[in-house]
Image (cartoon, rainbow, N blue to C red; front, side, top):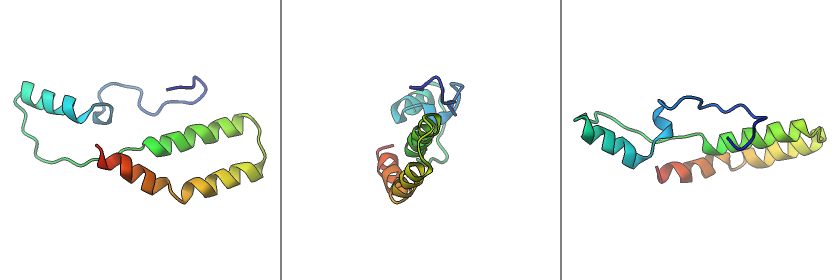
Length: 88
């Protein structure tokens, strides 16, 4: 959402990934809903990776730089996302 040149994947406000844990609990209580299951995952780091890669491509940087960026990020992208997911 920081760049007008990169399409944002979450365009509507109805997706549960756009709400905090507290706001989901509030809605559940407000409308007397029962939580039957939940799990926490997101794509924050992948979205950051994608946004930066699109910007690198827009700047016409060398293929070597893009390749290095992909290699570096792929080595820790899952572990970074896991840490964010742990915090809900």
